[in-house]
Amino acid sequence: MDDFGVYAVFGVNGPPQRLLSADGSCRVSVAVPPSVRQVVLFSSGPWGERICVNAELNDAERIPITIGKLTPYNKCLSWEQWEEETWTDSVTLKITLEGGNLVKADWSEPELILAVTEYTPKDTVAPLAARELNGKRKRGRMSEEGGDENKAAKRGEEENVCPNGSVEKTTPVRKARGQTKGAQKLFSSGGDAAKMKGTANGTGETLGIVGRTPPQSAAKLKSRQGKTPTQSAPLASPSGRWGQTLCPIDAQTAILIGGQGARTQFCKDPMWKLCTEDMSWVAAETLAEGPTPEARIGHTATYDPESRRIFVFGGSKNKKWFNDVHILDTQSWKWTMVEAQGKVPPLAYHSCSMFRGELFVLGGVFPRPNPEPDGCSDSLYIFDPHLSIWYQPIVTGDTPSPRSGHSACVMQERKIFVFGGWDTPVCYNDMYMLDLGLMEFSAVKTTGKAPSPRSWHSSVVLSDTKFLIHGGYNGNNALSDTFIFDIDTSSWTEVRLPQLSVPRAGHSIITMETAGHLRFLDESEDAGVDGGAVSRTLLVFGGGDNEGNFYSDLTTVAVEEVLAAI
Image 1: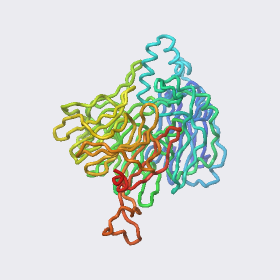
Image 2: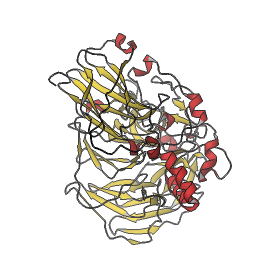
Image 3: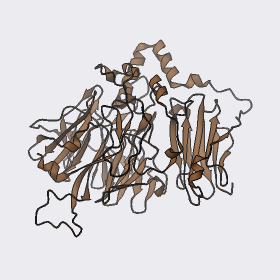
Image 4: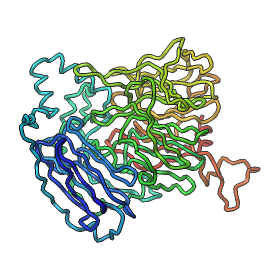
């Protein structure tokens, strides 16, 4: 193993088998033996100029079950069947090498099809048939044995239901910089919707499940597209997605992490760097050293300006739930995973706020064993990065009810305002305020037209006294309305802006400095040597709409324009 190579271990007793070598093919497919329940992929030897190895586990129709990526800093991947519900007997491992001495012609070379010698140890009990471990078959048995348990299990799934989740109708098209629309057609109506409680309103919209892989449908089989060599080319901007995080790290730079996109698959391009000086994207996953966080949705990414680090916490991936803390040092550009003390449950769709160097995590969904439904939390957990410890503070007052998909804004460095969220089947539009000095919650009595009940909306601070709420999901549809809350008057104001007229849920909104917004400048302000000016701008990325699109465009609107619309 002196030269560079990529190896796979099929099953707990299987020997390493070489799939890629320094002078071999850059694209390899391997049929996973039916009895194998685990696959481990790893590299050995110097990487040189090689960038990464993309890996996919595909089903019989060549649709990815799960994806991963080896890099010089993340040299091992592992998958287990219990994590992936659609892992059946006909699974193929496909790996593709990027970088090194490859030229464009290499992308068009045929895949090398390898056969794996199945390893069967002596004197062992034969594994259960794959069909016995298949999640769909298991649910079928449950429905036959006990209707009540089956209903309870379905209620548990609803905590993690993606709005209008369905299937992809067209092959995704990557949009070049400067184009105004970057949506991937993903959702359609389907018969599977009738199986889920979230569609009791009769809309007929199919819902995809976040936190597990949804059942295959006939519509999905019809919509599958063959892959072309051009799809392996590097992307110029992120693919469409929802449930990601977009985290500013300075006045003109933000980091995009995670999310779920087409065909309810986790994005193959999970990390990007946005520069608002020229509105350009740079793929950033292979730039950082250390173990990168596993693909996920419903996590939080919170920036600490004092230490200049991003803290990624929680989220879910199919049947896996996370309570890990990953830290990205934006100075050394290195990932580390924290071995934290104390207890915090796995959470997704929670809120996370930074206050005096500590993370304040509130609410969220947590898993419970079947047939119990997944639960919503009403607890507040605090993570101290200096001591690497979780603790629960003593909180008094009128605390919010359990919920997930809510928003939380830190105002004036002394208050956290919590709005909305849901605990299936109830959506909320109430407001609570946590006094960070007294550690006391109180319900906020508001005036004006309040936003309708919703979850998975986005919020952003506009000024010392105002924050914005946009979009979200009300249990039936994605929303497009925009509201501003004034903490001094406790009043809501609805604003109408053409740029924010598209329904979105699970999207990201941040404020950044950009060049070129001159309309709201005073005459005394300097427009700059080149005629441009620096202005605070609202940036909206990603999310899903009512027609089943996942967006990859950046929508921008000047903060001054938003405030002027009040």
